Length: 580
Image 1 (cartoon, rainbow, N blue to C red):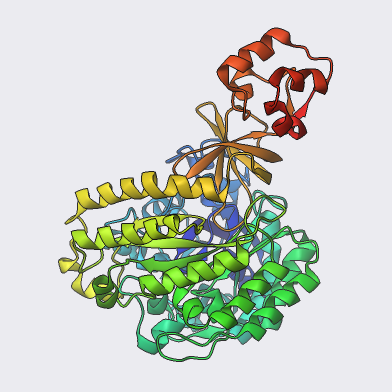
Image 2 (cartoon, rainbow, N blue to C red):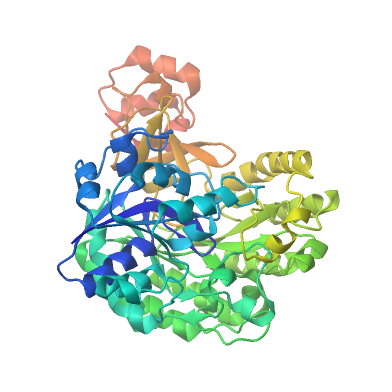
């Protein structure tokens, strides 16, 4: 039997599967199929394979992609089963991949005779943009095009279906004992990832469900507690076994990101704020490092700031473990959402503004030192959602003042993610969706987004990565409008704009020379001053346009010393970045 898994990419509150990330759903699906049918021939296709084969929307992020499988059409023609995994619940901006939605995949596969199965979070629909409600048309289209829409766990359904289609229950969930083999066997699909092995970062699951939601309910907008009604922690040994399988294949970049709060792994329930378990986190990350000693990226993702603020001693131990066994550039995203206490109460949000401030302060004290790749070891990010019920003009001002306080107090956050709320089926907001006026404060939202980007993001970015910082191992990903865009591998990596065209899919050491609101400008080093273009030369700190003209007039330089003498005192600062 030939099976095609089409990865439409996923982005949800507690997990990411947009390249360079390989998410959990294709891996688990592959493993379940292989465990049930050893003779199955399973092909992993991306939505970009289908776009390149059949045409379709191709923006900046996808226009240069070629099919991973040039024979995509033949694979789909011969497949007995076509599986689609997708779902966009927390829409963002993506550099080299664009997530798919049901309308797009339906157009590509509806003509094939194979049994069609939809899995992952796509059954709840996708967020086309912030400030919207999920389209009922998308949900009905899924029912029309797919023979089976899986509402439980895709891997559980596929294992049963491959053994006996009549036994497959689309509402069945698996437990972690069942997942153990699927995860290890599914590691093999990483070989088929387009950018394997150098440019793949694998998302690793440790927990599902929301610990806070089990105590007092989930946030009004969040789909995680809707999909998983209980909290289940994955055994350390199982996580380590999956990482080992991937590491043995050649994967070197990992994010332990598939959970709502890494600080709540194996925590003790205690109402709103679970009691963290540092020993469990130390065992987990020590275990990963023991079997992956040459790992290049080991990061985490989400964290509940209320846990850190209310249990500082335990949280400091956890943060130190993330630093000791992990790699620099790590970012844990804090779900503040709003600094307005009234909005926080109405929407049952994770943490107060004061708790979030204390958590930011703690992580700065523990993880603010700069690591060997040029980034601080461990910083928080801040998630903000506009458009929540109960918001007033004062709400936006309170959130702005909170962020300004962080800046004024000399603290660092890696990034501030501003989204507009999206209303999904099953969430508390869905039941009052007619009263969720996502456009009510449209002009206010635009105004405060502008203020945050200009008055907070820019100076914060200059603090996190000052001019003169060297970021190591920046992968060049796309070229557009005379700029090459790249980033490091990891959680929420900074986008670096390089003011020239360089060969893609290579790693560069980059000298930071300027800042935008959410990205930075950098030039690859060392710089060959006898051959480099004047455009790049003028970016070098201390040179500028006038000195660049003088440099052009005196080229070629016979020695480094001759060139540095031309710059005077400024030459001492950049000498290490120059070659002839």
